[in-house]
Image (tube, rainbow, N blue to C red; front, side, top):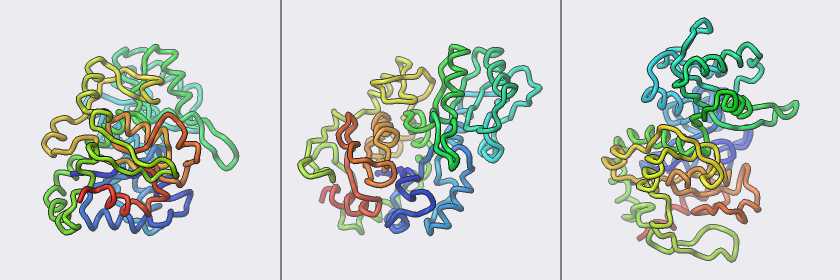
Length: 351
């Protein structure tokens, strides 16, 4: 039973303008009971604000369908941390950590530190407080809501969370738990969140499949030859199961202590305590390679998802550039826009 993860900016919309076919494609998913989640690296706004933005574009969404780094971090903290958490995030984002016990600036010791894009909220005293808390408790994890270096504001480039995370890593000698794309940990948390939806929809999904020409989308993709929607000359290729990152392979890497964090595995790994939800996946019968990521970023969306064992389709909107097709990362499919997903899905589903 497959599921879909949709990147937001660049896939569903560009700026404040929805991409053609976004609302229709999501309605198609709901009509056929295909479980899906929205994923984004946004940390400066709560999910309710993102719901309002989508609603203004005519795109139906609920807050619990959106996975952001703060949501992934909260889930991770709930399993690994017991005690007050030092939250270095914008005030609006604190709502996503309502289940955590926030540390007070007067606290001498915390159980974890969470770093987000605090923007102009950073000053020496605030940054030094994060440093001191980490030094006072060598076991406190440094949880980063991404490693973005900077972003383009209307008045020019501005520092994002990445430089502040790297500074604390350097001064404390510990590596961060990164919970933002393209981190495999982020995708792992996203899969965990999706499992409830998958379980609840399993019965209705089976019924819906029988109404769509008797097809079972994505089943067997790893065993058949299938055409990529890429440029002329790509033709088709064999996509053997053995060539895909497997859950067994991920678990082996996890036992050795390594997991992709901020870059593809060939470039950098972080040591963190994290694993895929093996039992939940087994109960549902949905391996990670039956989950499809739709994104416009060849590294953050496609490479990150594939590194976590998912399949990934690249859209030619948003960040997409033709040179993305010439690099080391190869998408499992390329479509012009999200509007083409239903057609691609039907074409790649065995009869």
